[in-house]
Length: 360
Image (cartoon, rainbow, N blue to C red):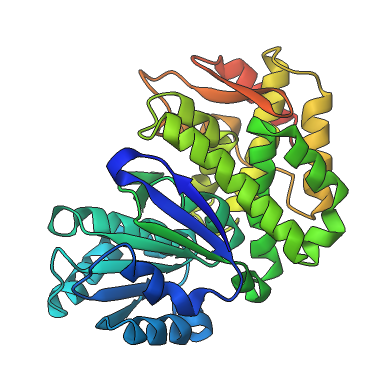
């Protein structure tokens, strides 16, 4: 089992990466917390796959536990769903020593973290991400949120988990399209900080798609280590942490304008990264070889690369509701070379339109 530490002073925590470690979650908790009770928040399908291992492990560790099941899909990331969970927690007599366990993908993790941050002004929670995307991205770093109809992740708070447990075995049951969507986030890490990782992805496509354990461990550990360094440097996203948003401004607009129903988050991100790379070309940050190389890698993994038929005016209007927009000026993470990006403020709308036109 590999252990990475996120060094944030009193908010520091470990990321544990291994195989067949879900049954040890109760033991991991006992070394870090003294919960009055533990509540698992998960989807029905995920509970069926992994719930019993974790629940029995919690009982063996001597913890009273409960389960709250939420509907599948992005629709559960809402204030309405959060209120339903608060109701259940009150019925269970949860107190400030209760610990929430997010078992699932990004939707479960984001919602659980938001609830943990706000229930009785903050209680502990643990992330057990079961999708590749959540293992390399959303489970790490303490961003929690629910969506608003006019924008993704608009209502949220920073609240770090006490522990992240990544079991590689959970990827064996992950639908192929969800696994590929998660690879988009891994590719993002290569683009923003590590050309070696990007080249590894180019050279090991078949092995990764066949879920080779060594490859999975390498790309997950490397991605988490990159994110850990960024979060340690800028926990609250004052500036530097924004590099993690490469492709997200375009991607979030795609998700919002298609009502979160047409694309998985990683698929929207993949298209958004290509658009961000073409924007980088338009603004003189990089050569055309960069978006072409990114597009070719996404194609090798059979991840969507073409933009939906959206009006550029609608996309730009949506961007103005994005959290990264300040003083009504569009801010983007632009790529200089694979492995190097920079944050650029006040990007001209004409350049954004030109980039959107390159990706149809």
